[in-house]
Length: 79
Image 1 (cartoon, helix red, strand yellow):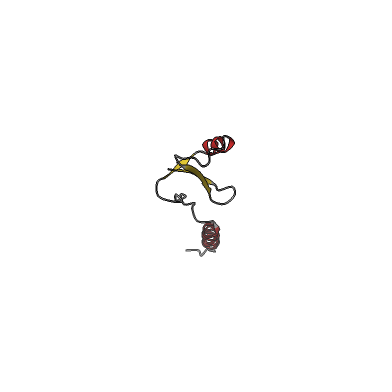
Image 2 (spheres, helix red, strand yellow; image 1 turned 90 degrees about the vertical axis):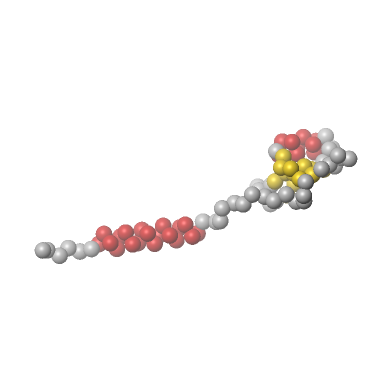
């Protein structure tokens, strides 16, 4: 039997290590926003904007709340 070089093994190991490092560098998956208090329902941004335009963010029936960071906002209606 003739001996051959095992370069394929080194290449496969290097690829596996590189893929593992890339996966570890990814941020953790986004978690769903939690309501700011009990009794709040998630609403669409358009509903929040419509209420803001009509000055209804706070009313005697409930209020709209915006939570989260910029570009990761969550909108809620709390009764």
